Image (cartoon, rainbow, N blue to C red):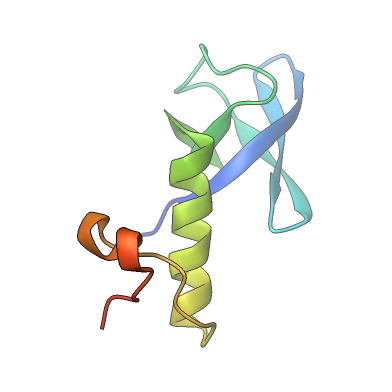
Length: 88
């Protein structure tokens, strides 16, 4: 299974971006996503930025990944958001 993770672009030099994922900085190629800019959130897979995403989408993905590692549920469906009841 392949998984792309959201990362924030914190620096750009030529076609390489410095991205931050969970407090860790790495480099990702912008060869496939030349329109990405400083401050954007991107999905990174195998060292390549593949898609620009919203900060909300990045936060939600981070929360879901944390849940897979045992964190409390924080992501809700639209209907459940009003009552703040977790998805079960």
